[in-house]
Image 1 (cartoon, rainbow, N blue to C red):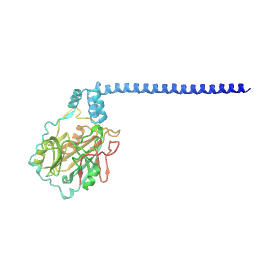
Image 2 (tube, rainbow, N blue to C red):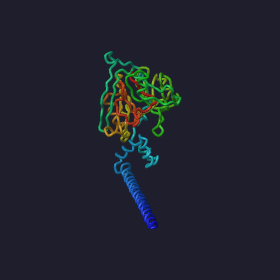
Image 3 (cartoon, helix red, strand yellow):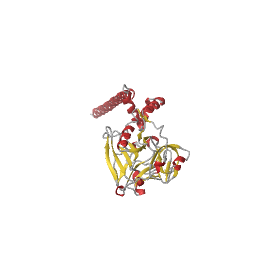
Image 4 (cartoon, one colour):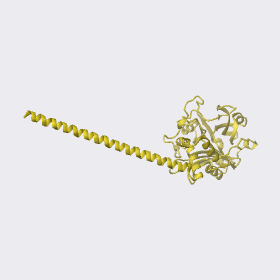
Length: 351
């Protein structure tokens, strides 16, 4: 009787083991099937995405393709995709066909650039904030009637390598009311901290980054509060009385005329622009981009808006995820960066 009991027990144990093995085998089989299904979807999705990219970037419409490529080139991930699908020579040719021609924007300072602005006392404190928009973009335009209220905020540790500050920090440090981001900076893989500015930076009539021999596209104000833009050396800038300046570009409006555009004149992206009217008023423009509500603006869009606002001079500042407008204690544009306001080496502050 005992033997029969043990036999039944062994049989039940063996049955349980077989069931466990079957369950485990079934789980492994389903896991493999699911994995194969997911991999198939990924491969198929990747294949169709690649085909879609080929159609978009190398498709039958050069105008559309060039716009997409120009837009992607101004983003970190987009630039990587473009580099993977085109040779350096092809990229250079595409960008050259879709750009702003600054070959004629060598800075030329005349006596008119030292004239006084006759601003009525009742208008000296006037600041306007205007909502602006176009076919693919929305943004904010700040009009500062008195140009003497514009001051350059700089990283006080420049060029020591310490991280820059937010636009808000610069505004608060100077005791201002508002501001926008300024010049470009070293930004490897989109992770730059604003510690190393691009080109030349001038503050209080001194070159604090770069050298007198460097030849750059400078954007700044002289002793008479005139906005001076164009290609020049650091020595030229000091000779012409430029007190505060940053490096970037391109120049968009020069001597009251639009700079020549080739092709689409650049892609659709967030932009920061600074300009000035003949009466001295400073135009600070920030355009949102890379969002469903605002894809971004081309350089042509920015030129047209600056001319509509009667700018006689205007230039492009650093854009993309750096584009910020701060006013009366808050950021008033939609910053594209997922991590919020970026650290930058310079900012134009309204006192």
